[in-house]
Amino acid sequence: MGKLYVVPTPVGNLEDMTFRAIRILKEADLILAEDTRTSGILLKHFEIKNAMISHHKFNEHKTVEGIVNRLKAGETIALISDAGTPAISDPGFLVVRECVRNGIEVQCLPGATAFVPALVSSGLPNDRFCFEGFLPQKKGRQTRLTSLQEETRTMIFYESPYRLVKTLTQFSEYFGPDRQVSVCREISKIHEESVRGTLAEVIAHFTTTEPRGEIVIILSGKED
Image (cartoon, rainbow, N blue to C red; front, side):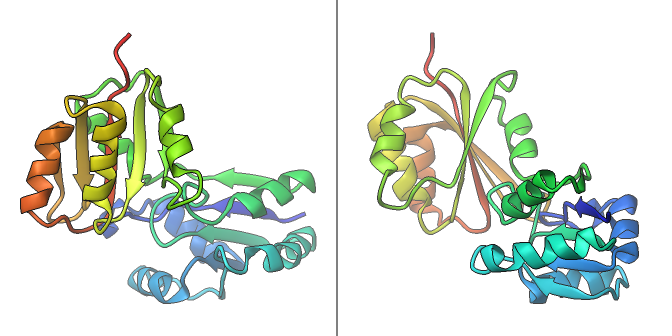
């Protein structure tokens, strides 16, 4: 049996890549990449020249069986996404699940995940939290938001800069304009920024200042 390594990659600063992650990628027989063009830049930077194929949400159902067969044949395969830890709002869950079902060893390296620094730096309670990732765009969105109205734990969401103000405005409608929030963008990059305050205050900020970059929203839970 081979082994599947789940390898986090930097969400911004390339210096966040670990020595172990570089070694595993150099030793792997095959690298599964969400976008080979994006990952190609990373691999070139660290002089990693191993074979790489696409593994993303549009083809993962078709490719999983072949990957499992290669692992059964003894290959070592590394899974990476465009940024952060695979399977966290990124492709990866399906191949990990099939490996577990087939008795193939899976190791996930510790490393970059965008929501952790956003949560820690938010100043909001982090002893208990729930990760919601990306909300449904249409079907199920209102149901999800309604179900979270009584949530007392700190909530974590991912969002694009183009939908940020709309999403924060919806949060204000469902959770109230005085609910505390921290919007963290461009984590580990040069222009990293956290905007904290009530939903009303943060909406006002991003209404006048166009948001850019990858966004993590940390929203306080309902007070007991």
